[in-house]
Length: 356
Image (tube, rainbow, N blue to C red):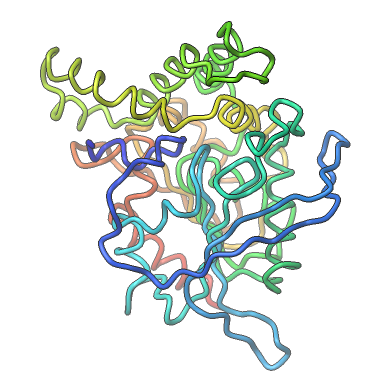
């Protein structure tokens, strides 16, 4: 598989390189009874799956002091952060998030991975969750499930990047530092909204959709969805180098598309993309009180820098630093967020400037 697509935050993240080294990972589930969603609906049991690396360290009062939470993007899971381009750059001895020093928490968000999701059985009767619902579930996992009421650092990629802004406003004292990667702190509109709306329309316009009660996946709609996901997540310069002519490009697509469609569930994907519908933290950015390093990449189709949004919003974050990674044949478009070598030094600097 081509490297420039491996960081894509969508369900395509299910496909990727094997881990370069085995990590000592603990997995578990936290069940929240009678979880109430923003729309007023309630699930009797909301399951949140998670992975952890390292061990919690506690102060004299028993409070965990070394927790780091990393949040995945739309369609992903916490497992994506065990891939070498992320884990092998950050989690080893002497590295920025050395698991001998930090307690790293990798949740699967609502609707994703091993957590509660439509394909578990409710299908299109599953509550239409929002980013605020997802953040509240993350908070309850930390506090009620893992006994963590303070984070040394909260990182997030793509959707997780947007969650980081929500966290900073809703719970300004919970995390000591924030590192959002690959998003904007504003309403999803324009081209960013269009591709999401097109994807959702393609799924529900498929005659096999059957109001979400399909017996077989609506593959016509999912093929369009997979096409869009491949396009919006790719790095254009690397793509041009690695797909230099028509025949190579067509052959690659013919090979990749069936594999990617096979890993998708239509209800799950529709809900995952729809969850962004009311995201807009732009009004309360001044509420973010901790050091922030916000990073985007110049070749990101989803967050194009020419819109000037970062220049508008970044000055409103009191301790904020905005970094734009230049485009190159080595960057991965939107997926640059998961390739830590491009921004590892910024993480080190953020940890240093957020020391108490």
